Image (cartoon, rainbow over the protein chains, first blue to last red):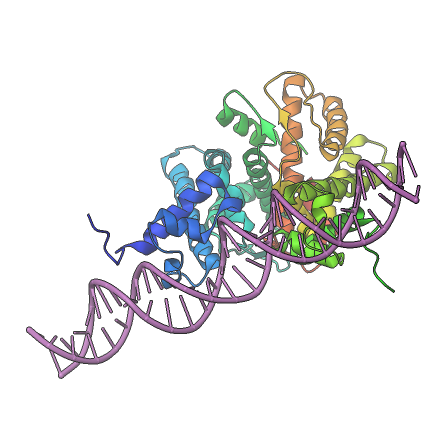
Length: 195
Length: 195
DNA sequence: CTATAATCTTTACAGTGTCAAGATAAAAGA
DNA sequence: TCTTTTATCTTGACACTGTAAAGATTATAG
């Protein structure tokens, strides 16, 4: 039962232990040395696999982003709504629910820069963050179908995304409590956005 | 030119130096010892005025919240729109612009708990966070005036607030760039929220 | 004028990220 | 198979962090 000198799969172990630590204690209580200890390894061992703490966090971020993206894609795949408009609402709902179920993920994922889009140019708004791309693609179809002028489509996409993003923030920060069915309540929020 | 042993106004100096530090370096680079050094005082001096780091941050949060509230109240006072509907949009605009002008304030203000409201009960949604109260009061008048059923008013308030809150988050995290007039663009976002 | 209390300094300790030097073992080359 | 190289991990060190205890200084009250 002697522990071997080489861990064998340390990089993945560190990533998963790090994510577990974020889930359990939040980002403010996260530390490299704790992650190393969780893997039964010395405090400097992570430096064989990651340049520094920020580098580990960045790879963890990519890991969680992939999970998040998977959730959104599942929603698209399993849903069979006649119109994209309803699908968009379900995507928004999944977006918020993902963070409701993993409260620590929201501030973790969005505390470091993860995307950048530019509204200065005309044309479709480009972005390298897959979850936003998925949301954008469906929203674009919906808005075009509604007959919204092309010049307003980008703005409307941002607005709709800001709503679900803001809801996620509000909910995960526990600014609003609710002791009944969150899932339907979130759907209400998304449908009820009267301006 | 001898520095006196007693600072004289250290508590306020610490608060303001702390806020300046947040503005210049962000919350991640904030430290008690830096704040003390900025005031030309030993690293343990803050403990005569604050229980610990978190306590100082909490008082700084209150300080910034008061500034934020002042901005929103100025908007209400100086605006002379015929209907509350337009006022609500201007409040939302001020909300986002405040954080656009002080990018570090958003994550600082909302990284620690600052409010809690409960949607479980019927009746007007109560909250102890003054900026939200101001927003809620105007939103409530607008929605009642629109003839929205009482049961949907609370949900709609949360949705509208989530929009401006989400926009603030997106903008301050620099997720969306824009090289022209941000003020009018933000107004577009708020008006364009098609659901 | 003295005693008390408030304010600030010094010292100390545990925890943090990071680096350099060394130990161990796996992989590659002979 | 034996040696060399390389990847991986440990140890020790350093500066920085928050926080507590003990002492110094000065304002305030009696």
